Image 1 (tube, helix red, strand yellow):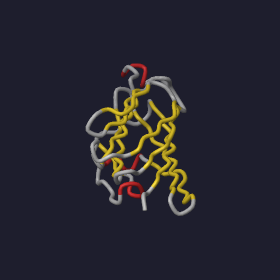
Image 2 (image 1 turned 180 degrees about the horizontal axis):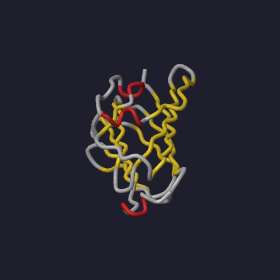
Image 3 (image 1 turned 45 degrees about the horizontal axis):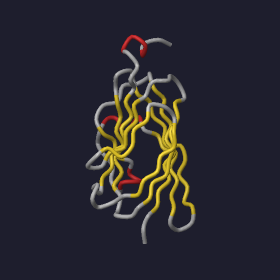
Image 4 (image 1 turned 90 degrees about the vertical axis):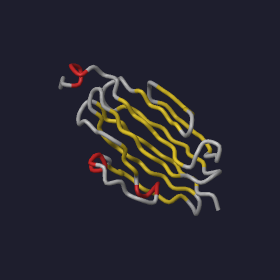
Length: 138
């Protein structure tokens, strides 16, 4: 049976720098040892029937920094999600497999179906595009 995933992502920019990739254990069946893992917080995790999961994730990204979330998916898995900025207004959000599937500079919904042609690992990359000086403001 194909696993379906709903991902609700909250981006809190301009606070703590995060480096490298973090792998969310509930979504990827393994935990990364990256130091950025500690800054990712699963706010809510809900089973929706036998085939759907919903994860609400929050994290902070410093000015000029980025965070990547890796999703390991099977062929045919569906991902529906959204993200928004709680603070700030500069973001570069991308979803990539072997190629870029999606890109947005503002809060938005996204949806895709995993396919073997794209890979079994998908990268959700959040980059805070604020200048370093902007990021130091309170």
